Each structure stands twice: as structure tokens, then as C-alpha cells.
Image (cartoon, rainbow, N blue to C red; front, top):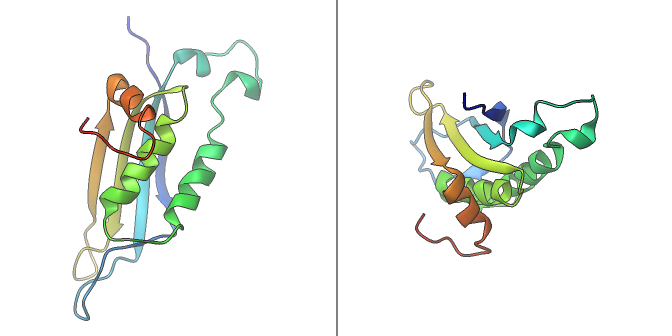
Length: 136
């Protein structure tokens, strides 16, 4: 049996500014992040109850908050790219799935999001890219 382990973050409200809107456009009230990180099972199936045995996600969340608040983004995709790079910087993270969505879309309802899924090879490749994104 193939065992997999994931760390899941859902509905993280980001304090960010994304997009350019005209006077009659619907401006989103919220930007929400969902993150699923594939990690080695040894980071979940642990022999003792000690933090040193697990993946400490607090520094990653702090970096995501910093990136979100870093300034105005024209697109969700740019912030998503920076979040993916931040995740890939951790050798413990093997796969990445990110969903960044905004709401409302129009007339006070709906949400619209972008999803990015990186397998282990793509995550490793992204980790090797400093400030330049190659086609993955």
C-alpha cells in the first residue's frame, strides 16, 4: 500500500490587495487560501510526541502572510507563484496544491479561484529556481 501524508490549510483569510477595479466593478471582500502540502509520512507517523519530529508550518504561514501583505498584486497568479516558491523552499514539502480564491465575484455572491498542483518533480524544480520561473 502506498502511504501518503498531507498538511492541509483551509480558508486562510489573506490580508492582501489583488486586482484593478473600475467604479462599477465588484470588488472582492475576501481572498482565501487553501493549501495542501504532501510531506514524507515520517513527518506524520511519529514515534514520540515532539515538535522536532513533525513539519513546523508556522514559519511558512508567517511567510505567506508577509507575501500577501507585501503590496498590491495585479493578479492572483503572481501571489500564488510566490507562495508556491515559499513552499518549495522547504525540503520536507514534496508536493504542493494551492487554491487562491476571491469573493464575491458579482452581485454579492460567488467565488472565483485559481488552482495550482505541483507534483514532486515540479516542486523540486521550483525549489531550484531562485527569482526566475521556468515553464514547469
